[in-house]
Length: 338
Ligand SMILES: Nc1nc2c(ncn2[C@@H]2O[C@H](COP(=O)(O)OP(=O)(O)O)[C@@H](O)[C@H]2O)c(=O)[nH]1
Ligand SMILES: [Mg+2]
Image (tube, rainbow, N blue to C red; front, side, top):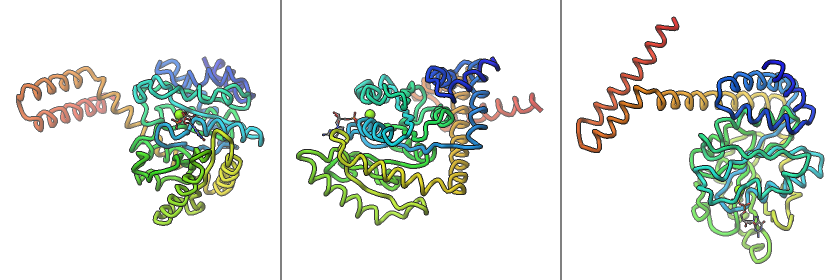
């Protein structure tokens, strides 16, 4: 296995897309044997990136239908013209979140997907929180090690997951469409506050003027927020992902963001924060998994639900008893390992 992992690594860092695809499948696999190989592989990537990490990683967020995928395609193609290599992560539309109602993001990016300088990964939904999958941090690591310098993660744009997307990436791009305030676009004020770059998309045809108005609205709203990054003042711009108008400017802003971010101290500190956030999150997921799949706990929960349905017993007492059970199980394994 070890040799195999080394081979995959060597191939993927030298531009072999099949090897990179294999690496991604490996890190997304839940099989124990794959997990071990994935950890080895990720270690090699981490090592390489600690010497030089060429990547900047953005979350691309916004309500469904505002044009995130179309924007990524348009921006990605433009960025490739400027010599970038683009890595994109999206969620498989057959996921439980979108109920298959959202057109496959990868099919929205068909030109980009076909370009050798781009790699578009549609991750299985599995346990995802609004676009950050359990393995998103790993996939970003693989993309960066393979030399993709502009990494874009399309998120689904729901609630608290945006905060996680913000924590795990270098920058937060919020895509909105002309008209309406945050509320009308289904965006919580908190999300606007996270944005480093706000893109008012669909600034074309009859919507052009309204887009300018919307931009002004966001620009004045931004004055009331305190900046979350001392080295950057959030920017608002308009563009059309369909006509390409304004996409060049969006790329310039992204490049200047990258410059402000590429100061070694800033980058090192930010990446350390991201790793820590990811560590905590992935541990929480593991604990949740262990608790939910433990046969004894599962049975107790199942019985508790039945009791609640039949108005039997006290829910507080039941919760307390299960809590004690979980504590007991952890203590028991502690003693075994001591
Ligand atoms: N007029 C116009 N339509 C756009 C633009 N960008 C995307 N759309 C359309 O908006 C719809 C949703 O786009 P999509 O990229 O799938 O949105 P997402 O759900 O945010 O990823 C599609 O019908 C796109 O063709 C744009 O710049 N101008
Ligand atoms: Mg999309």
